[in-house]
Image (cartoon, rainbow, N blue to C red):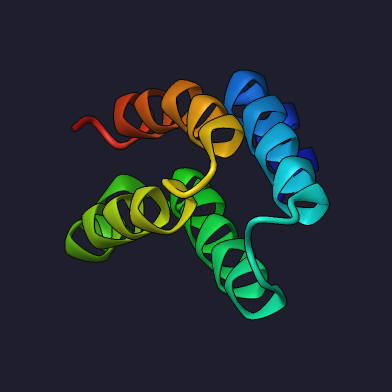
Length: 95
């Protein structure tokens, strides 16, 4: 998804998703189950960025954006990265 986003003009989001994904993998503050859930949620969001606007699931997108923030809020480092990425997603989704 990251490669597709880069080639479709969403390179800033792709870079931030990649940075957050790596930080989550490296984190000792989040357990493996939560890491996998966050990875699934990021995968969903990147797929939604690439989807046609009329096919996006806006309610689910909003829920996922809030959910990720809640889970990673235990880590200042992850939250700092998310605070850069979340606005990029919101712009991409027109929120």
